[in-house]
Amino acid sequence: MTEAEWLACDNLFLLWNYGGLMKSERKVRLNGAALCRLLWDYLNDPRSRLAVEVAERYVDGDASNDERDRACTAASKVDAIDMAQTTPVHSVAASAVASLVRREFSPNRFILDASAGVERAYPREGNQRELGIFRDIFGNPFCPVAVEPSWLTSDVRALATGIYEDRAFDRMPILADALQDAGCDNDDILSHCRQPGEHVRGCWVVDLVLGKK
Image (cartoon, rainbow, N blue to C red; front, top):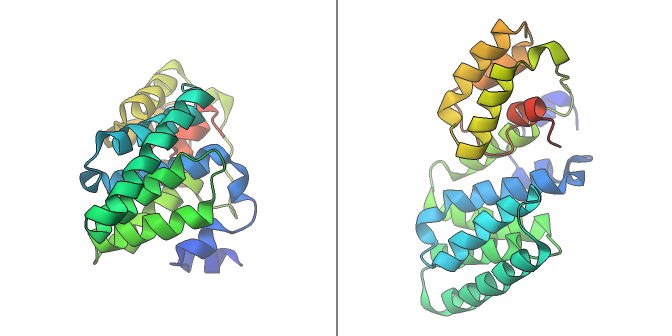
């Protein structure tokens, strides 16, 4: 796949399976959690919502293996119930969450469930929202970006930390201003922070500033 093909591609399966992107389990699971959050209104059982939150904390080392396993067991029970009693969107949403918190996470199996749910929940915009989340997390692997240490001022770090922890992605343009004030002149970084598209936990710019992989 060339860079032009990558940028034009609208097939989430092809993008997920490109190159070495899947080497970062953290980013893969955060991408999965972001898709599950698109289905939040269809996760009627609190055990499913808790499982998504546990998955997000787990990748940052804030949840133990036992906690993740308990969340997986609970989410799997919800999945079994929803398969028999709820609408197709509710059912695939529950299945996606159960896949997300499994010890052995299978991206391809997960994307089957999550995409089916998102595209049923958002028939006109589901695919574009999925692609937006993917590109927000993984960026452009053909054009890797490095951060200069001088850009990482206390203000920049504090802003990025707050954005990440509070999911305050409306502050991304403020982060761009702080980076620019610190000397950042990288158009990819600044334009990504200022673009109106969807940002989620795992955003490549925020991760770059915080040193997360």
